Image (cartoon, rainbow, N blue to C red; front, side, top):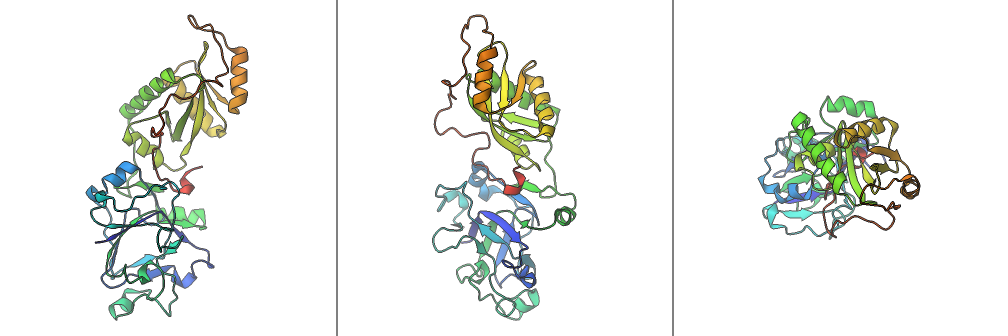
Length: 335
């Protein structure tokens, strides 16, 4: 049986948290650590990825005692409030989460010093082992397979240093993807996204709030987009995500954002015009937009009402998965 370590993974360069001479630590005899993101990358996953976890073929070889590893920390992930323990899809491995049971939050691979814990393969081959209270020092974890289902990002490091270390690799990777490859979306994929967005806008109730995500040229609104399209935006550097408001009881359809960076506005407007020519994109507080829309609204044929949309909400049933579902996205990837 192995242990799956689930949460936010971070290497802190704060000397108060990680002593400079303990940024690298050795792996105990008989222990291996399987990573799914390369150094300095975020790891993204949804519930469907975890459900198929035992079918995933890692692109990275596990680290064994002939290697060293960054002295990473694991923090709790508030997006996983439900109990994932003893999930049979984890192939009999035990799930470890910070703050659950006797696991502290955060928990570090090694909490010792060079006097108490090995930092090189030579030391472990000569019999030294971790005696700290970190993950590598716990007797129940030593000699086991450890699966790091978390990021390997650096906290507090100079951005230029991190960019150089990534050497052109993505800043985040989807669980199961090759960490060296960027996801792409071709013209066929973009058309499929537009078709889905058009249907979402057409059938959205007036006054409904919808989730959205924006990454590069790809704009997703609404629910239940194709998994590969959601994966694309979530692994993309600089992804934006939030809620938008749909106003469409009159002759003009309007998509409202409470906040939208100036450089993102043109991307969103271009995308909206592709699937809803003539629709308007506003940046405003939702309540202000509702009132303004009602004041200037012109009723459509067969519908003489123009409302603010206050009384109309989303018709999604409770429990429906939102656009990103249970997607874990590294904090630094969300602007």
